Image (cartoon, rainbow, N blue to C red; front, top):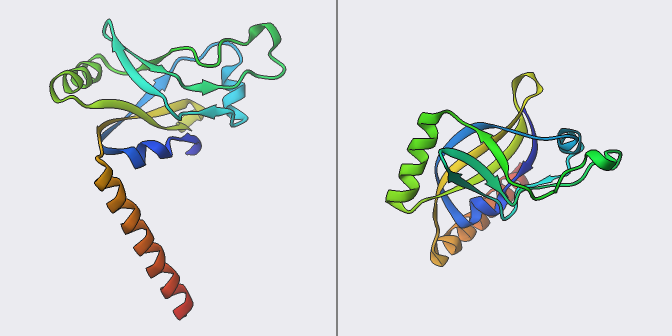
Length: 149
């Protein structure tokens, strides 16, 4: 599994409750640009409309040799999920007030591009501070253990 892009901000801003793997529908030269590593998940989210899931605001840079075959870099891209999964996610979003955020973009088995979509709940400011404090403590512990040996 080769990770192309990761949404680190999502791990900082949200509690990750569940994750789903989905395919993504690309057009033209977008796959070549993704293989080069020109994709960004920052500030992107998933919208469900008419029983279909779309990733919004995901940036894939235009392919340099693509000329007229390039498409808009921030267009909505359809996610390939099962109907049951889409209904379950839609229900969770409506009833519990959760959000759907893409967390990883990677190549799965058989060199197919996959996107990990997570059901998330927003963190409060004090939750973020606690996470930063725990991360700093863990870093200090690791540093002390490394110097010990």
